[in-house]
Image 1 (tube, rainbow, N blue to C red):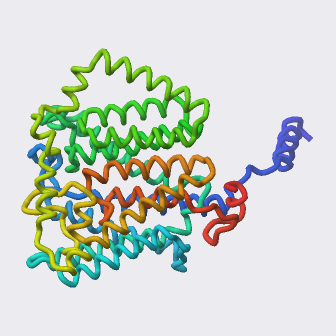
Image 2 (cartoon, rainbow, N blue to C red; image 1 turned 60 degrees about the vertical axis):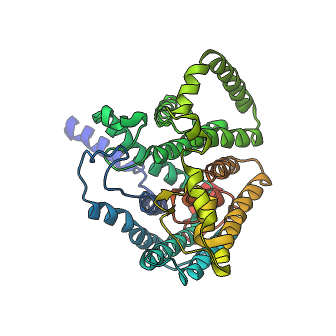
Image 3 (cartoon, rainbow, N blue to C red; image 1 turned 30 degrees about the horizontal axis):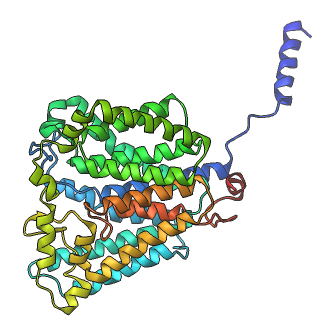
Length: 431
């Protein structure tokens, strides 16, 4: 045999003896496809609660003109699409018993009762908002089989949704910084996102990232760069409530997870804050005032006028208990801007009581849970939402605030050793 032929035959034999490259496991592929659909469903739920306006907050048209009909179709059509995506995963329509969602279902029932006697002229809008809230809660119920994942899938989904929305805000700032900062506060220019909403998204994203750093779940230059960018976005919104809520949430969460890393960060923050307050007190005062007069600060930028209107609105006994039905959270053309006043106006004392019960359930449950990353994130979220509920609405209707509270509740669900939706090989890795 010719030497070259013998060499070729020998090499070919060695290749045949070598083990074949391992193929991707079917279970891992199935779990990856499942996670992608959960990501998509959560993103659609998030889009559903981001309202669409005809123009930007500063009164300018959008950079890419989106007709009002198309914008509302995108947001309002996201909920049915989310339900379809969830049903494609949860075909057996399995749900897990859940105290938080039971309270949320009671809120839906209270809204249905209030729908019976709505304010004249808004019956159709009240019915629509009630069914929208019911569909939103139904989607959360259908997602309960994945609330117990050890890999915090829903937290990753929420961060992905927040970064997607903040990415559009940052893109608008890079393309047209003058428009984005018109009025001295950063707003969305590709999608009509107000400075308060931008601050809310940035504060929650930044808070979750810091908590993950507390617990050693994230590190590296990329995380630092993303955190600094989100912090810059929050600073440019000039929003006080979200900044206070972020600080309170991190303080409570950090004290609960009081490790060396947290103690070191708290020491650095305390020293930095002291120097900043002493050296830049006038600049900080100017930033916090946002050019407002003392009278505007006293009445909370006009919020107290709307609150007085809510309290003075005529009510019979039924409306005192169940309210007027879900509304657009405004009275006499003024935004109510308080979850408690809005809940009282829409669903009466019953709605206020259920909102209190939901927040207390998550807060107490998180406090008595063993120390973990999930507990720390849940504590941050619930404390953040308690503070923002004083001057923001959302916990009594489908909103990003209610979605965030549901995320906090999902992190407190005990992890099961088995799941009907997860292959056993993946379960063994996560447990």
